[in-house]
Image (cartoon, rainbow, N blue to C red; front, side, top):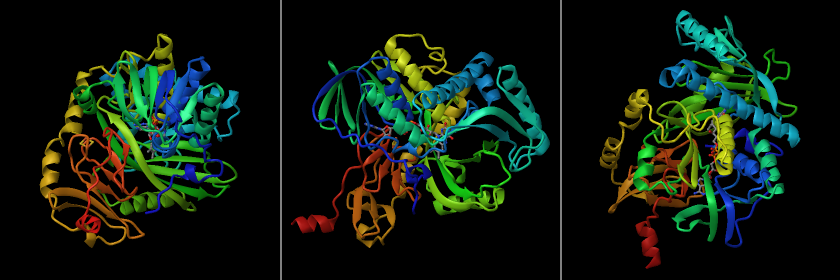
Amino acid sequence: MDTQPFWLDTPGGGFEAFPPPGDDLSVDVLVIGGGITGVTAAWLLAREGRSVALVERETLGARDTGHTTAHLTYMTDTRLSDLVATFSRQEAQLAWQAGAAAMELIRENVESLAIGCALKRVPGFLVAAESADRGEERAVLQVESEMAHQFGFDVRFEESGPVTGRPCIRFAGQMEFHPLKYLRALAAAAVKAGARIFENCEVTAFEEDPLLVHAGGHVIRYKKVVIATHVPLQGMAGTLGAAAFQTKLAPYSTYAVAARIPADLPLQDMIWSDTADPFLYLRLGGTGDQRMAILGGEDHKTGVVVETEDIYRRLERQMARMIPLAEITHRWSGQVIETVDGLPFIGPTHEAQFIATGFSGNGMTFGSAAAMMARDWVLGRKNPWEDLFDPGRRSLSSFKEYVKENSGYPLRMIRDRLQVRAGDPEDLARGEARVMEYGCHRIAAFRDDEGELHVCSAVCPHLGCIVAWNQAESTWDCPCHGSRFTAGGAVIAGPAETDLEKVETRAVEAAKG
Ligand SMILES: Cc1cc2nc3c(=O)[nH]c(=O)nc-3n(C[C@H](O)[C@H](O)[C@H](O)COP(=O)(O)OP(=O)(O)OC[C@H]3O[C@@H](n4cnc5c(N)ncnc54)[C@H](O)[C@@H]3O)c2cc1C
Ligand code: FES
């Protein structure tokens, strides 16, 4: 299936290449991960005069920052009233203030560095779902709107919102931009300020005494490390600590389709989402001469086998209903990381190690806020959000969510293992992928369009669950904690930190003699 994010397919969406390190090096701060969190942190720290190295396993923006829809809003995916119930009024307000401060940082960066990334102020709308009872949803949105207003945000309730005509909350002064053009310019500014960036440079091991990582065939020594890998690497957390932390995260796959829309469409540019579960999110705006609509939704837990063609068809039909003249140009999917209490985990997990994860669908803002917090942590400054987002926090009211998100494991591990049927990878047709029992292995086998067979173990190296084929992205995804691997088995998203083990077929073994 041809899936490419719109951003990777626009002129100027590409990047200057940053080769891997040619030698060992030593820095004040090592940043791991080249998405919005890592690049923003590298830029902020280099600007403060710290020596910084950023290492990225693939290329900058290759993962979720390149797969986003880039609504810039302080409105969290978790409803404000739910945050108040789980935390407190002050903390819910503070979470939204963090988002607003991140939006301001992005605006300042775009202005001071003259970044051409089509940043635009637009209104945001949270609209009652069409499937919901109009009266009930109106009442809920009125309460939410009143609460947000009391917290000092510029919002108002409206009886009839855009696109579907349902009751809504209107948020003034939200924003949208081209995330990769922003990222590219910020990376260039970081380099200009002295940061060193290395792509195709994977961190494969940590050592504590002295503090160093092995990355790209070299050793990088550091005083502090910022792990900005979306799902954190284990680093210095210890296996048990990392496994326990992982149970507080739940990776979800989410899907998007982009379309060209007529320039004279009588709908203003905006960001829009509804109150369904999973919710739909829509963005109207241009990134040049062309007006675009991007519609997303259909979230489900990563690794669950779904008919992805059906998902895209549903989104495309929905787009046609909302904007009749929309002409679909792109479709893609990616991951959002949910947490058990609805707020991200950002902060130190060791005296020399800082993590940032669990942004849900707010990673443009929370990722930028995390970078500000990482800067303050390195500089020894107090940050207003450090207690709220503390990765070690406990929240009793999130226990129900904890049980919901973790009830599948280890039952799933056992059930999926038992369900694997015997087969021969040689029987696969072009484009076909299957998990099967083969000799003494459970294998994940895929035959590509050129006829080449890719065979590896189907057992996830994180905690042993059986991976499942993701038809939308041609990846192997793990249903237990969301690790993802290429069709050939290379790890592209944690918590797994190593590839699926290679398995040789009988034909390959025979050819070797
Ligand atoms: C379809 C979709 C729509 C979304 N819409 C929105 C939206 O409208 N607004 C919003 O705010 N957010 C949205 N999000 C969420 C947002 O895109 C993400 O939360 C955000 O991009 C995460 O950024 P990040 O820098 O933390 O992680 P990433 O962009 O995933 O970057 C992490 C990087 O770490 C690298 N890495 C991993 N392991 C290693 C290693 N061992 N060594 C070196 N490098 C490593 C990876 O290769 C990757 O490039 C959306 C996400 C998706 C998928
Ligand atoms: S077993 Fe945990 S991600 Fe696969």
